[in-house]
Image (cartoon, rainbow, N blue to C red; front, side, top):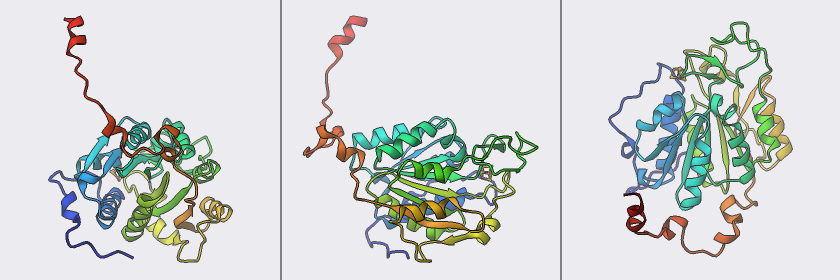
Length: 295
Ligand code: SF4
């Protein structure tokens, strides 16, 4: 359910910019891009009050299609940057975006440590089960027996069980939603923005150009809202079970959440009791005398 917008709060148009989206017709990125802006607006966060960190991929092309402070990083490396920014300024909400290719291959180490550190940031997985930007190669999340440009006979490896893996790391927030359901994505992202710790949001994304198995219609037919069916998101065992078992239906919504654990920043002993943030403590030092040594 959407909350009424504040009369003097941010508006969707505040996030608009003149750059045109270049995604393919029917791409799930359009829906996610809209839900991200909607979640920020409905959370009362203006463009100057958030940092949006993008990895490389088709989704990363959103980085100059909306306003706000934005960072566009290297493939698979967006999480360390986002974590560092949050540690420097813990008052700033941070949303981070990565694809399944980067996040579950070269970036997987960063994901592991972001979860176990419980960094207080939102991570949005654009999960289209392939490397869309580089013309449809299989990723580690490509489904079994599906032909992709790099694997015309299907992938020889098994598909990485991403949700089971994620739950093995003892996360504090796991949600799943689908790129065709803007109202649900908006609500999930708003909850993720409020979460105390690392919020992992898996968005099943339609990629009509390269992914012909997990289509918009497939998700419409198979996804159900677990929260509306009475799922208790504090039940870790049940959450893991419904997250992993997608054989008949795909659970969506907030699958698991706990907020009794402190986030990374709260655990840092040197920061405890401080009234200022690290960015406020930066001292301007005149280095001109040192520079003379190199002249
Ligand atoms: Fe979207 Fe796929 Fe086109 Fe990339 S290749 S813009 S993910 S439809």
